[in-house]
Structures are given as structure tokens and as C-alpha cells.
Image (tube, rainbow, N blue to C red; front, side, top):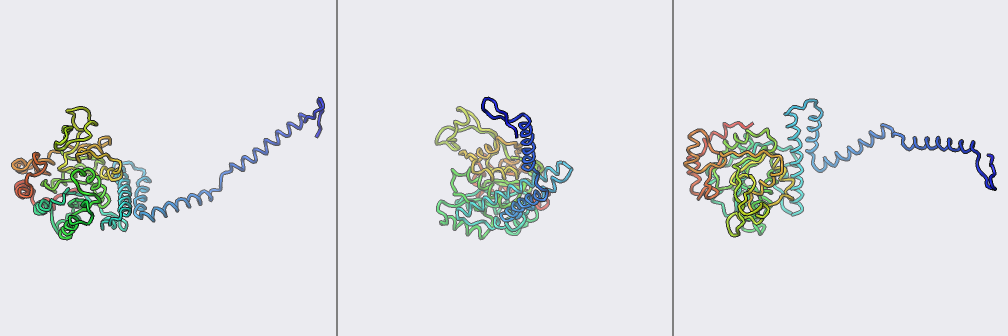
Length: 402
């Protein structure tokens, strides 16, 4: 290598400078190619399979049935057709997965709170869920034993007939109630004895109280979704008369709609005055004096589709509770893409109203007195309403819902 001196300093010749630059370039190129070399395809497949295996092991460990649901989704997505039936089936598969998640969450909460799991919830982990048409939850209270007995004596099938209704028609009916303020107290023990006799009570992880009806509604949907995979979930009060077959045929018309909220829609006034019935402490959220609520179904009876009940179940911890339960439910759906179905057959009056409609061939789904928000003196009068407005006993067995 030659060096040239300039002012006593040594410098490298231009030729050697050029050679060094070219050499550095090729050295860098070789190094870069080695760094960015694509891994062998076998290594990629092996790594991918390893990750997939870990995911499936975790999934199988915590919820075996999710694998069946995932396989259904893969089959649907693998088809070239994009018909409405395919999309509905895919939506149903997603809803099933969401319900499995809700069931897992409920199981976790029960374990954390050291409360026993319902037998139906335990069965979810060991077998594929049976498909139901609708779940009817009859809202009741500890002091309403006579009301429950009056419902059992009229429109609610008992014993083997109720079991047959579940197996053949996919209709589940339960009285819905939580626990007393003192867990395991006399109220709970009395109700447990009643349930052993009739087997028609759904206990909620909820402390009963009139001011807690909104919370009870959330818990009801969450519990029902975790126990029964149904097209519809219905809530009805224990002082309302219901014609089950007519309810079923009414809901069946909306089975193909993903998000429906069915009831007698209203938008009553927001009551700001303290001490009055249905007082709304958060009246300021709805504007000034004289304002009305948004559209929502009256609380005596309403129904929601599977997807909406699942939504309530998954988001129950962040859904706001207003003073009135029916307002709360309406508020949970107000910002969603939900179809509100206003069907006046769900809020007929007691005789002669429902009787005249039945004679005209327009049988009512539910009957009650608006003045009492239910059948006035229902324990004594519901038998009369059933006799004059009830559908034929064979109607439910002849009805087709699917």
C-alpha cells in the first residue's frame, strides 16, 4: 500500500480508497443477506403448529365445546356461498361462543363468591347445549307464594307437562328470585322447600329488594343465557296472565331477526318529584321538567332475542341502572342497532277487553290492569281471567314455532 505525504501527513491513494469502498459494500451486502434470510419453510410450519397447538390445548382445557363451535365457524367461512342462511348460521355460532363465555364468567364469579353452581350450569361443561325456543322468567318475590300458586293453577304447566314442554317445544318456564339479605335465612329455606316440591324456581345470585329490580333484570338475563341457549328470553311479572302458545307464535315471526326487543312500547313522563311512585332520581339526565323517557317496553312482559340477552350478560357490569327496571332495559339498547317491536297483544286489559279479542280470533299474549301494573287482586282474579281469556289447553301442543 502506498502512502503519499502532504504537508508531513500521510494519505491513502485514490485507487486504494476505491478498492476499500467496493470491498466494504460487498461485505455489507453479504452480511445483510444473511441477516434477512427467510427461515426454512419447515421451521415456519413447525413454529406455527406449535403456537396453534398451545392455543388449542388451552381452549380444550378451559372449554371443550368451544372447539366444536370453532369447527362450525371454519366450515361456514370455508364455503364459497354467502347466502342469508350462511350469515345467520355464522352469527348463531358467534352468539354461541359468547354465551359460553358468559357461562364461564358466571362459573368464575360463583367460585369467587363461594356460592354453589346450579346443576344446569355444571352440565354445560360436560355436554353440548340443547337448543331452546324461549325461556320465560316469571319475576317474583319472597312474599308472593300465593301469586306463584295462582300462576301454577292457571297458565303455567306443572310436573310432567312442564318437562314435556321443555323437551318437545323448547319452552322453559321458571319463577325468578334471588336471595334474602341474610343468606340461608328463613326466607331462603322456605323457598328451597317450595322448589323441592315444584322444581320450577330459578335462584339468582342477587339480593332481593324493590329498589334492585334493574340489577335483578341484568342478573336474570345473564343467568338464563348461561343455562339455556334460546332464541328468545322473556320476562313477565307474577301477576300477569299469559297465553304461552300465542306468545310463542308471536315471537316466532321474528326468529330470523338478530336483535329484536318486543313489548308494548311507551315513553312515559320522567318524574322528578320525590316521594311519588316511579320517582327518577336521575331525572336531570333527561332534560327539564315535563320531559319524557325514550321508547321502551312496559315492564309487565317483554322479550329480547338471543343476541341482546347475550349482550346484557357480557356487559352487565357496565350497564347503568335507573330507578325503573323497564327504563333501564330500554336504555341498554338505545344506542344499539336494535329493532323495537311494538305489539299491543302483549298488554291487553282484563275482561271484557281480552275476552272480546279472544272471541274475535285475536287472542292476547298477556292480560293485566294498567291501574295496578298487573291484574288487580291477581290471586283471586287470575282464574277468572284464565277462564275467560285463556287459550285452549291443546293450543300449546298443536303450535309450531320452528
